[in-house]
Image (cartoon, rainbow over all chains, first blue to last red; front, side):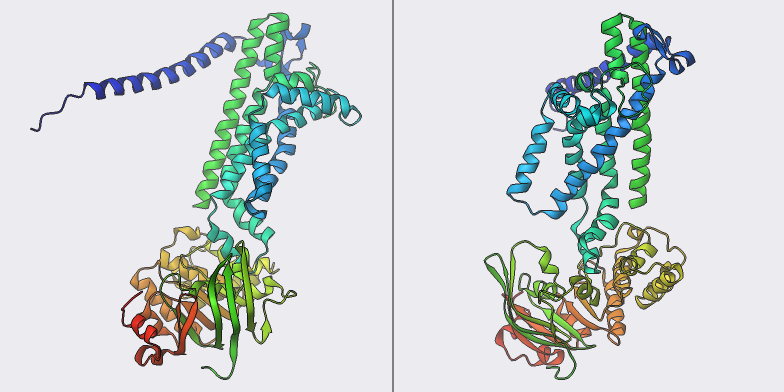
Length: 282
Length: 254
């Protein structure tokens, strides 16, 4: 009576699920390990602090690191207010209706568009049409294009974050005589901040990994960007261009290692900040 | 009913959610510095009525209101009424405690701050005074910087009352303030209400008839959006005039 029933099927399923999970992690570790092993030898102080020579096949990647940092900052600077603002408007200022449905449908549609299409648009609009304002291929054109690209993610994540703020907080604040903006600014946004930050981090990730759209808008200059109206090159672009144009795979792998390191650094710092925020809100 | 010093008067008040009529022709006079309880089964309109008194229902979508709500003899639904001033005057305590996710101090200082008080010492005084009024000071005075969400439910509700008192309202609207609390916390809130009655007009919605009987001077019984009976509390509970009131207080339904 109390003996175990036949559990071969159960065992089989467990085995399969375990293997799937193991394989997924193994692939990730393999890729990361491979790139780091191949590239690590090339990363030294000189590589990090020198200018590139011979189209990047020799020398370092210092201007490219700086270009990446500028690009990410500029993109977040334009995308965050727009994205969070849209989310606040959708979630706090409108009732569910035709307009919100159209805006939401629009942002979701944008999320599904391949990045090269954004690149094409960015090229035609920011680089060519608005040349007088953006100086053509420049950090401005690239950042604005990337902004269009990451906006949907940002709006969506911010909206979800705002939705998790209990209605009772808003009511409590309004009942004390606070107006809408005071309520949003002082109660709703602080509570939603961890979620919004997560959205911003995901967006940075997407922008930093982008190549195709940026080839068309950021240019690809190897020089140190002197202002936001100069062209630049991000690490992802550099990796692609060095590999394809010079064939120097050592530099490409080295760049890959630096790129991965930067992404991990951003993620860890952000996670730490978010944890601190959540702890403060509890 | 209270003849002199009526704080709140409604005249032929009708309220609709979309097509549904939630309040039917409510006429009531609520006395100043009295405790008035609204009782009735769920969905009878008592909370809706409470929320028409500080215009919290404005926040909902398709609502319509007819008739008058007079507070200190002036109609709060006139188009030139400043809702912010109105809500400051009509403090509200909600069903489940809703402190903001900030420190105890910041919670109480929130109202005064948004109404323009910046001076640190003044804020400190207001916070201390309000917490004392809400019988919470002794329990929290040493950790005012602690997060409010770490307090117990009963303490949180007293904090919410302190937060309301800090903006110096004249009326306290309480929407089932003890329904989420244990009996001991409930008792503390009831004692607090007895104490606050000296200075404030209190309107309390409650599910709990014993509570209404214990703490209120006047009681209104609501059923299906109508105010069936309104009288001195002892009359409502000892010699109700309406059969439906009698059925409700004797527990025949509800």
